[in-house]
Image (tube, rainbow, N blue to C red; front, side, top):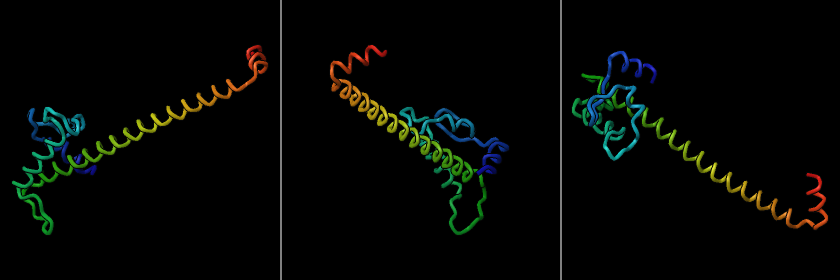
Length: 130
């Protein structure tokens, strides 16, 4: 993939969007989906349409007249894949954080129960030692 990004940056590859042309660097700042339509989903759909018009989709032949539409799609798919993986990682981290908070709350509850179960003498001794 490195060579594809190098090729894109050297040729000044641009992607069509609702706000005009975007550079490869701009794609990293786009959300996956957005109500404004300025997102990776719409850029990918537009690039796929351009790829189909160029006759760039080949499965048994490598003869492509213009390699740029296929390069655009490869880069967009790569960026979408990374963003989806990052989104899944963030969702997992959020779920883990919520679960950890529940466990810590349960520990605090058990500690309170253990403290409440002590005798008056034990509580007085504990208070005096603080």
